[in-house]
Image 1 (tube, rainbow, N blue to C red):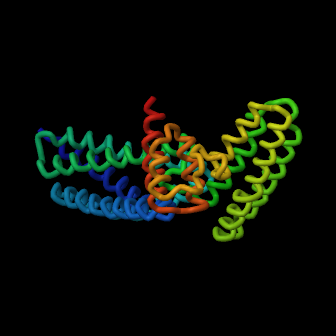
Image 2 (cartoon, helix red, strand yellow):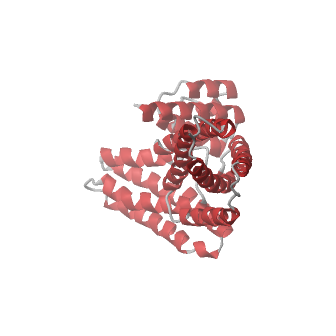
Length: 320
């Protein structure tokens, strides 16, 4: 026999979590890197809203009143999550999203098992929830894989997350270098770090101003300092340090056309550039071209090919 009380309990939890999922999906749309991702997130929010309605219908059929108080709680939880994320690195925020989706997935599977002998409509609903959340888990896993290999992921970090990540990178980089004769390079990094920290301290003046300040600092001061530090490291024959700095510049999209892994890139047509990108084998190489294309040419066909290839190699890298 079906344990109706257990079914109702799981439906109530799914109702609350789905409401939070819907709110978070709405918040994520502003972080979409492309129109395609924005449409996908908007559709996901719409589908979450539809799932919420079906869960509430199932509760009514079982003579259980939907949780009206939870509607307010879901909004509060989503708001708190969005605020807490501003003090997190971008990858931590994505891991939080993944944890929410996995909980929804696991509870839907449990509900599916609970209703194996009925009611049929709730059992079918549980199966559809499992399928929907499995798809979202896979998408978020791919986003995290792209973030893990250096991005750019389909979602972009908020200005606050960008600054926090940059401060962390600047603080950690001297320790990563650890080579003799890099005092001058360290001085350049310190100057860049001071600019980033000044930006971080000014974030309370408003999101727009913070975004502009962060873009100015991260787009010019830090890039220039890293390039200068790499030149110094190469001149002083600190090979490990130079490679670390070059990797950092590549991850930030600060390489010049002559440093890209595709010869004569600036002279390639859209079909030729897209073909060249599809032949790249490492996420670092694809990322370097993608970042350069975004900042200098912004050709839709090349960007699509590069993003598709980046997702492929990211999944392959993480799978191994």
